[in-house]
Length: 257
Image (cartoon, rainbow, N blue to C red):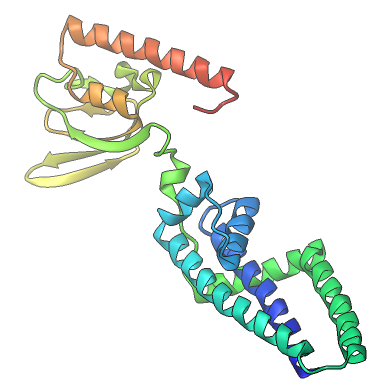
């Protein structure tokens, strides 16, 4: 019976490890369902190829979690198979039937344990607080949060003397209508660099400013090379038209680009 108990303990701790991995992945920004699927896939070694997998492998913290789950999963699977085989080796048919009955009963109990919502909430609560206390997993995945893989970008460029932006206030530029947000400005003042975070509408853009912008990559690239004059104004209107079309297309597709 020792080998049977050892096998059940391996299965039990495997469930706990997957739960820990799920909570850890959730703390990096993944949804509950995606985190559970990725943790189970990594631990079992199945390795399904999904779009979420790209977010996992491109994120250093998640990649470390998945690596640990894969290592523990390979060791746990080998141990489980070994102890399961030893449970029935050299036993009489009666003993095998007896142990098989207990194995089925215990596995059913573990199954209901793994599927219990009450147990899941309790374990998740304990695991999350332990991870918060002893690790630094609470990170923000800015790539996924800002949609940087969906055509959006965060970049910076320097405003030139002949730039369409130079000498004008943000509210007059109406960059939001082009789908572009100015997140910050770096400005040289008296030989020192000044940082202006979340600039307001009355902030004037000066030649030499370095703008940190968020929006569609093409829109920011065109904005960075836009020059003063009628041509620049026409390009601004054209950029607004393109943004309006893009927003309509997004609404028609259910809010996804």
